[in-house]
Image (cartoon, rainbow, N blue to C red; front, side):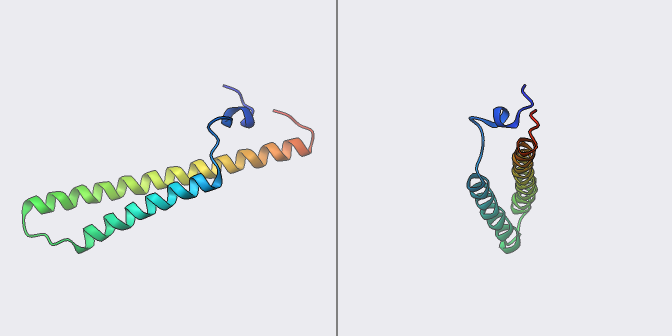
Length: 92
């Protein structure tokens, strides 16, 4: 695996718009999951099981959102580092 960020990300590089699109979709799913949890009536043990699954889904979505934000931030940092090294004549 190359340590050159431009080589490492070429072909799989995501743009800021790609990350924002992913985050928007995840945020919509989180909002919908929260709405179902908060507004659902629980009148049976079966519905309570469904609500528990919704809580697990919500936790999963929040974790995925965190990972996407981390990936975006790392990508941006790698680009900034490459630019800084290039401006100083340093190469990886």
